[in-house]
Image 1 (cartoon, rainbow, N blue to C red):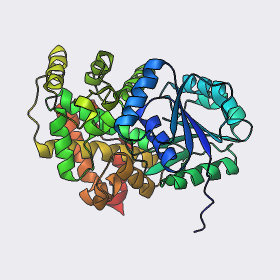
Image 2 (spheres, rainbow, N blue to C red):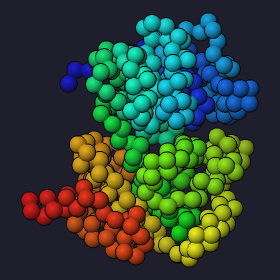
Image 3 (cartoon, helix red, strand yellow):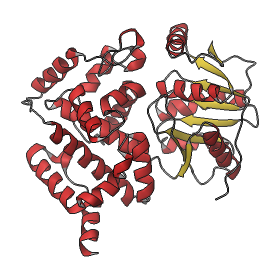
Image 4 (cartoon, one colour):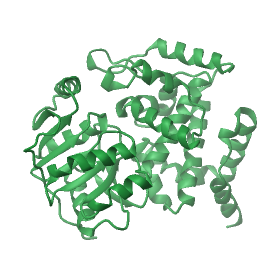
Length: 385
């Protein structure tokens, strides 16, 4: 297969101090691009500078406050982590930085229909992208193809992904985000019901995951899931009852960027168990009238893998090919590549078996474990094949 050319910008501006934004900025700088990080205020600028200095990743990155009037770049990346409409407004404000020919990327979750509409005037050079792996790794970049986006812009985004050493993947809707949402919320639900972050992470890492879901979520930033919860509450689409993180973020537990999340990170170093999280989860369970369960390692593995298989089946039913789902799952959730991904593993386990196990869980634990119609259809198809 013939690959398109690399897109090699000389300069880039990245707006937003999220871990995802910093990881992208560092990847650009290491590829030889002169990067300007745009922060909202002095506090954010200082925090970002200290974070990058600890990681020895300041080389090639300039940090500024606000939008310099004279700044012009070949590439503009909006990575604020804000709600879709705020992201669209920020793109409109910052677009002069990219001049008339610069590529504009909005890095983050799938934008709303309204946000896409507001960005329509830039469709010849604006793309929505998302990175699957937790920062600082960028193994795969999903590129949202809205149909109206120019082929030149899509090709340039693919070339940029290759420049950063990532796999570019064009898709009509993001795959990683719903897989991660399901995975993170299931992990939090298990903590709410009696486990703790280090038990969940240890169980999944023993299964073969690169990193447990709580440690990975600390890398991404807990505020991203908190914002997603707010959107889900507004749309009445939240799947698992998950009150623990909703209390953590307002208390300042943002993950590694705030030095405390599911774990503590003293001095910006490695993760350290924080017993206060266990106390917080037990308190929330008490408020909800839930008796904590002693969940074994195999039980934690079983429930999280079933949740991933169920979500992967939903994506497959929406038209996403199974190999793409499995590829993204290995990058986004760290699913063991040797096991092929959730759909490949689900087929090996038996989709009918997965439906039966989820049905039992739904009876015992609640309707949030109900197997999807998509999974039931896969089970039926395999049964009659």
